[in-house]
Image (cartoon, rainbow, N blue to C red; front, side, top):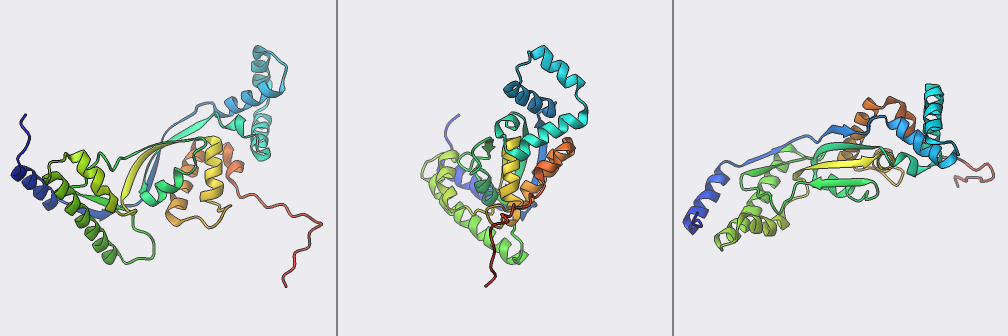
Length: 251
């Protein structure tokens, strides 16, 4: 198939601009897969570490252990921070959020694997959807997003008309895209990583969580607990221990 002429490329771009959609959407999270028999996996990992019993003997021990005691042992491991034992199970999600949130989640590198929509390969000729932060006016923010798309298309069109393909043009033009633009990603976290994500991005152990990130990570936890309700203690806010020998002054 012969390459398109400059006129054909320009017409294609202009037609797509006419169809453009710039609109807000809400962030969303879908749980698509998780480790089955999660409690058993964590229990076996722990018992392999601390028992001299053979594998058949451990299997028999599991079968003879009351459910309440199984749960107590596993939850106790989490409370004491024996991270390796509960790093084996995982949860996989499809997440739609802003680039603001995705940039925060990808910092949780240990136990987190992400495949994300590529702005190099996805040209936004017909517009994009975005996540609007709380506290801003709907109409004024939409106008800002429309202006951002205009800037993107100025660059994109320039590169396409110079002879570059869609991928190369999108790769260069993406530098002016706003962080509010929505992105999709498949995110798999170990249970240990999800607990850490909850501590930092939901409960705010290291500082006040950003609003949208807190919403997304809260939903990840909610979906995990819907499948494994016995995990609830692992995601509850922990009370900070106070040293009785330390006197706190309000002066």
